[in-house]
Image (cartoon, rainbow, N blue to C red; front, side, top):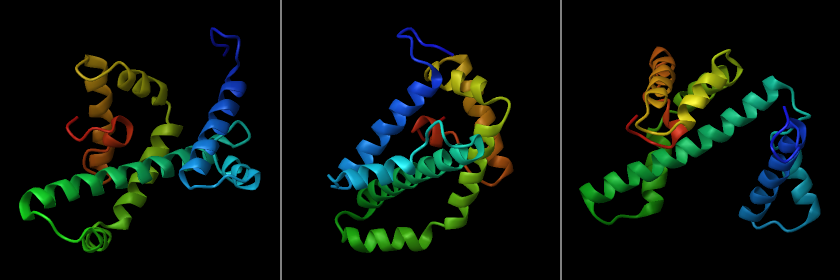
Length: 163
């Protein structure tokens, strides 16, 4: 597939991979070329098999969801209990939240990436909240999650809790 600027899917994937690697290197405070190279080799790109890319992308999404869950839980705890030690909260969160759920989430996301309905589901998500396609896609994704014991799986794709 070629986009309007004449870039093929492989070129776009390479640019996204390099941009993602640069962002990871910057976020971690790394400036050396070796760090950028290491992040690039562990970022999704055209050299990865679909299975490997799906695994990596699912793991990245699960990391985002876990951060989102932690922020949401912290906000709820502050509204209920006021100020407290954030370090204690972080430890309690890590102790209370089942890592198995996040592993199951990773596997469910990976199955969506590798599934035949992936493009249709993502087109629905990108149509935006409030549209019928968006609602249909989030419902299908949430149903996949329910079958695997994962509440509100669509948050991994939308960044929203209330879909």
